[in-house]
Length: 159
Image (cartoon, rainbow, N blue to C red; front, top):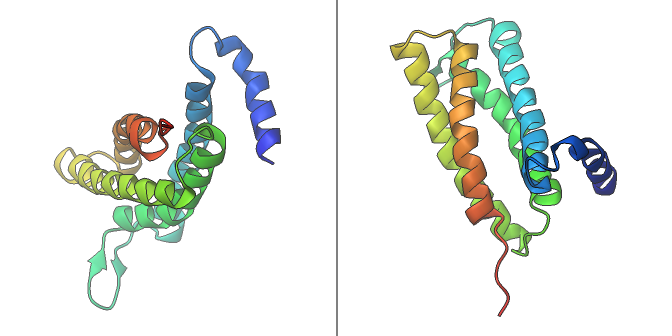
Protein backbone atom coordinates (compact mmCIF):
# COMPACT_ATOMS: atom_id res chain seq x y z
CA UNK A 1 0.00 0.00 0.00
CA UNK A 2 2.85 2.36 0.90
CA UNK A 3 4.52 1.89 -2.48
CA UNK A 4 1.24 2.43 -4.34
CA UNK A 5 0.63 5.70 -2.49
CA UNK A 6 4.21 6.85 -3.13
CA UNK A 7 3.92 6.01 -6.85
CA UNK A 8 0.66 7.94 -7.14
CA UNK A 9 2.18 10.91 -5.31
CA UNK A 10 5.29 10.75 -7.53
CA UNK A 11 3.09 10.84 -10.63
CA UNK A 12 1.25 13.98 -9.49
CA UNK A 13 4.44 15.57 -8.15
CA UNK A 14 5.99 16.16 -11.59
CA UNK A 15 4.43 19.62 -12.21
CA UNK A 16 5.57 20.74 -8.75
CA UNK A 17 9.12 19.33 -8.89
CA UNK A 18 10.75 22.69 -9.63
CA UNK A 19 8.75 24.50 -6.96
CA UNK A 20 9.10 22.25 -3.89
CA UNK A 21 10.86 19.15 -2.60
CA UNK A 22 9.01 15.83 -2.84
CA UNK A 23 8.77 15.64 0.97
CA UNK A 24 6.96 18.99 1.12
CA UNK A 25 4.59 17.83 -1.63
CA UNK A 26 3.91 14.59 0.27
CA UNK A 27 3.21 16.61 3.44
CA UNK A 28 0.83 18.94 1.62
CA UNK A 29 -1.10 16.09 -0.02
CA UNK A 30 -1.20 13.73 2.97
CA UNK A 31 -1.72 16.50 5.50
CA UNK A 32 -4.22 18.20 3.24
CA UNK A 33 -6.17 14.98 2.78
CA UNK A 34 -6.18 14.28 6.51
CA UNK A 35 -7.10 17.89 7.24
CA UNK A 36 -9.93 17.83 4.69
CA UNK A 37 -11.20 14.64 6.33
CA UNK A 38 -10.90 16.34 9.73
CA UNK A 39 -12.91 19.36 8.61
CA UNK A 40 -15.52 17.14 6.93
CA UNK A 41 -15.86 14.97 10.04
CA UNK A 42 -16.03 18.09 12.21
CA UNK A 43 -18.77 19.63 10.08
CA UNK A 44 -20.79 16.40 9.91
CA UNK A 45 -20.42 15.86 13.66
CA UNK A 46 -21.36 19.44 14.53
CA UNK A 47 -24.29 19.80 12.15
CA UNK A 48 -25.77 16.32 11.76
CA UNK A 49 -24.70 14.14 14.69
CA UNK A 50 -24.76 16.70 17.49
CA UNK A 51 -27.33 18.97 15.81
CA UNK A 52 -25.45 21.99 17.23
CA UNK A 53 -26.59 21.04 20.74
CA UNK A 54 -24.62 20.90 23.98
CA UNK A 55 -23.30 17.46 24.96
CA UNK A 56 -24.25 16.62 28.54
CA UNK A 57 -21.92 14.13 30.19
CA UNK A 58 -22.23 12.83 33.78
CA UNK A 59 -19.85 15.40 35.32
CA UNK A 60 -19.70 18.25 32.81
CA UNK A 61 -21.12 19.64 29.60
CA UNK A 62 -19.24 20.17 26.34
CA UNK A 63 -20.14 22.71 23.70
CA UNK A 64 -21.12 21.16 20.36
CA UNK A 65 -18.20 22.71 18.50
CA UNK A 66 -15.69 21.26 20.98
CA UNK A 67 -17.41 17.86 20.99
CA UNK A 68 -17.29 17.84 17.18
CA UNK A 69 -13.59 18.61 17.38
CA UNK A 70 -13.04 15.64 19.71
CA UNK A 71 -15.08 13.33 17.48
CA UNK A 72 -13.02 14.20 14.42
CA UNK A 73 -9.78 14.03 16.41
CA UNK A 74 -10.14 10.38 17.43
CA UNK A 75 -10.15 9.43 13.76
CA UNK A 76 -7.61 11.84 12.31
CA UNK A 77 -4.95 11.31 15.00
CA UNK A 78 -4.06 7.75 13.97
CA UNK A 79 -4.42 8.42 10.25
CA UNK A 80 -2.20 11.50 10.55
CA UNK A 81 0.51 9.59 12.40
CA UNK A 82 0.53 6.70 9.93
CA UNK A 83 0.65 8.99 6.90
CA UNK A 84 3.47 11.04 8.40
CA UNK A 85 5.48 8.02 9.55
CA UNK A 86 5.21 5.90 6.40
CA UNK A 87 4.61 8.38 3.58
CA UNK A 88 5.87 11.87 4.45
CA UNK A 89 8.82 11.38 6.79
CA UNK A 90 9.70 7.76 5.97
CA UNK A 91 13.43 8.54 5.93
CA UNK A 92 13.37 9.27 9.66
CA UNK A 93 15.57 6.79 11.48
CA UNK A 94 14.09 7.39 14.93
CA UNK A 95 12.43 4.40 16.55
CA UNK A 96 8.68 4.11 15.95
CA UNK A 97 7.77 4.47 19.62
CA UNK A 98 9.93 7.61 19.89
CA UNK A 99 8.12 9.01 16.86
CA UNK A 100 4.75 8.09 18.35
CA UNK A 101 5.55 9.73 21.70
CA UNK A 102 6.85 12.85 19.98
CA UNK A 103 3.86 12.88 17.63
CA UNK A 104 1.54 12.55 20.60
CA UNK A 105 3.29 15.48 22.35
CA UNK A 106 3.01 17.58 19.20
CA UNK A 107 -0.64 16.63 18.79
CA UNK A 108 -1.29 17.48 22.44
CA UNK A 109 0.18 20.95 21.85
CA UNK A 110 -1.81 21.28 18.62
CA UNK A 111 -4.88 20.06 20.49
CA UNK A 112 -4.46 22.89 23.01
CA UNK A 113 -3.93 25.36 20.17
CA UNK A 114 -7.13 24.07 18.55
CA UNK A 115 -9.12 24.50 21.76
CA UNK A 116 -7.78 27.99 22.39
CA UNK A 117 -8.12 29.23 18.80
CA UNK A 118 -11.56 27.67 18.16
CA UNK A 119 -12.90 29.11 21.42
CA UNK A 120 -11.33 32.48 20.58
CA UNK A 121 -12.74 32.60 17.04
CA UNK A 122 -16.21 31.40 18.09
CA UNK A 123 -16.67 33.14 21.44
CA UNK A 124 -14.63 36.33 20.98
CA UNK A 125 -14.71 36.93 17.23
CA UNK A 126 -18.21 35.39 16.79
CA UNK A 127 -17.19 33.36 13.73
CA UNK A 128 -19.27 30.40 12.60
CA UNK A 129 -17.71 27.25 14.10
CA UNK A 130 -16.72 25.69 10.76
CA UNK A 131 -14.98 28.92 9.70
CA UNK A 132 -13.27 29.02 13.11
CA UNK A 133 -12.09 25.44 12.58
CA UNK A 134 -10.66 26.25 9.13
CA UNK A 135 -8.77 29.32 10.39
CA UNK A 136 -7.48 27.37 13.37
CA UNK A 137 -6.35 24.57 11.10
CA UNK A 138 -4.30 26.94 8.95
CA UNK A 139 -2.44 28.25 12.01
CA UNK A 140 -1.90 24.84 13.55
CA UNK A 141 -0.76 23.17 10.30
CA UNK A 142 2.05 25.70 9.82
CA UNK A 143 3.31 25.07 13.34
CA UNK A 144 2.88 21.31 12.96
CA UNK A 145 4.88 20.95 9.73
CA UNK A 146 7.92 22.73 11.13
CA UNK A 147 7.78 20.78 14.38
CA UNK A 148 7.34 17.40 12.69
CA UNK A 149 10.21 18.00 10.29
CA UNK A 150 12.61 19.30 12.95
CA UNK A 151 11.56 17.19 15.97
CA UNK A 152 9.03 14.37 15.61
CA UNK A 153 10.34 12.69 12.46
CA UNK A 154 13.81 14.18 12.20
CA UNK A 155 16.65 12.17 10.75
CA UNK A 156 19.06 11.34 13.53
CA UNK A 157 22.70 11.85 12.51
CA UNK A 158 24.55 8.54 12.76
CA UNK A 159 27.92 8.65 14.49
